[in-house]
Picture 1 (cartoon, helix red, strand yellow):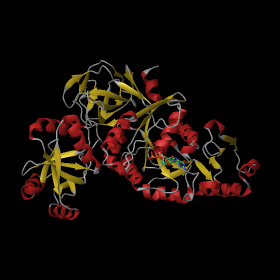
Picture 2: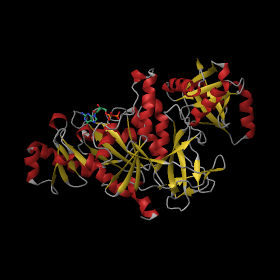
Picture 3: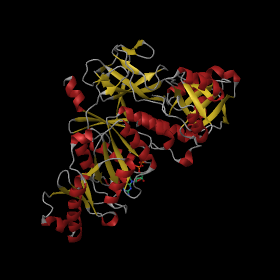
Length: 526
Ligand code: GDP
């Protein structure tokens, strides 16, 4: 198979949802179709329960799962599909944001009873910043939930998406009869806990067909006929071009746990979802079809085995062919590196690969060379865009609790920050280290891992800070005046960038008003 054929086969996407909407269940059903797994229950739910936050074994167990489920690849209808896992727990939202830089499209799962939840809103906002094509799957139709039209309204207003339904539910909860596929013009009848092969599909091209009345009953048939008329008036016809531009989202209804409506979703996905898309770099756009290899690191995972200090860096291939044992340029360190054991992930199984193509995600064993956002290329200097750090909202001072382990502590903190577990700032006035995170759980993870992986001990001290933002100004004089006046609130991040640490939303607002020529950024990339 030629390089172009290989690349055109790839579909790389992520599933996002608020915890409990059914992301894990849907992932598992998709893998079953691809034959990547044989039995249900093989995909472990990668979520950390709030109740278990102080249970370190639980954190460790979850970390193990999250390596195994970081990438799951399967073949379906001649395509190679890569699902990138996104943690649902909000304390790991930043991990999810970064993973979203490595996908070409997403499927959003929404619980029919709960509708659009906060985490869904946040994640979709990130997708919309990049015009990522989005398919919506409304799940749990076997339960009572919101009216389908109301839900679509909610999706449009809360997520800011334009939608068009490609399937439509017939009843719900105990009266759930199935869905009518607007896309394939089929009636698909629901049998709870039925296997997909048993799913009854009746081809009905004309909704006035009497078989509809026979199958779902006269009342429901009438409702469906009426509603499809309304759909025609209310929603635009599906147009792939708009979908690919991130301007129109098709919506499907189903029940993941019953494996219902999942095949329709997958069949449509493989027809419409984008091939590997170009990526922006500071230097130029990078096209997947280019001969020269390039890729970036979007996730780093420490090895679970304490005897192996190395880590796994996850690389998304953006252009050209990646080959084992070939020298590539590590752009930030300006050095050549080659990889003897690059791995791919078919479901939970790891295999060493000889080559990989744009759209693929591979794991590279790393002894501490990589940071999130690093580029690897065939020789060209490229810096991939869109992998920012987000302004953290929880802060603590870190104290060294074992002076004999100062070196270990410095190394551990460096490596954990490279992995993107949290961000570290050094205060200008006294050189104190402050760790900033998006969620409280990270503080426990850091403390535990420093001790178990680096032999270093830390204690935390509360820091009354609310927000850290990156500072810049086109006006040197204004910037100098600002840094002189606000010296006590300034720090530097690990990249040496200037950061303003605000004690409250209010004080941040005041400072912004007093220094109109200074810009305050809420992501590290500006
Ligand atoms: P995640 O947190 O988004 O990964 O959600 P899970 O896939 O773990 O699902 C959360 C819960 O919802 C589990 O108990 C599932 O069995 C259940 N669930 C998933 N899909 C459905 C569905 O279609 N109907 C019903 N009734 N429950 C479902």
